[in-house]
Image (cartoon, rainbow, N blue to C red; front, side, top):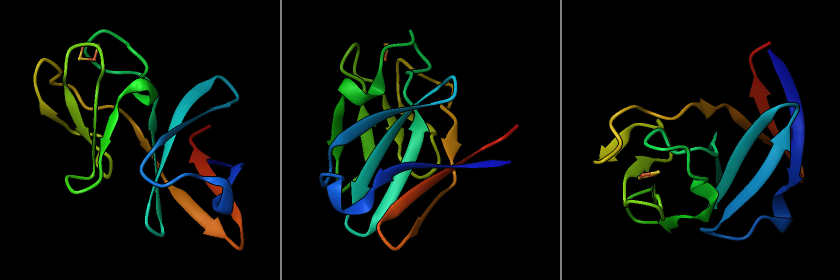
Length: 105
Ligand code: FES
């Protein structure tokens, strides 16, 4: 498990997708309040970038802009068709103003 510094917490906008690339992984960060979520930036339906979608703060989800599938930001679970498979999520830690994402080796 490798830990990567990916962003400054104070620079992350609220309830907006923030795409980052770590090694070969495209990841979408989303800050909601004091929490940060990290998901693979790729819809499981037809591989559209989820970072171009809409964040629903109340539902803690992202809606894919391509065909409307939604995913839970906490679990990556698909919560609305046409996607049924989950997207990978990554463990996030915040230390001082640094945001770290853990990626399996
Ligand atoms: S590519 Fe995301 S819903 Fe189709």
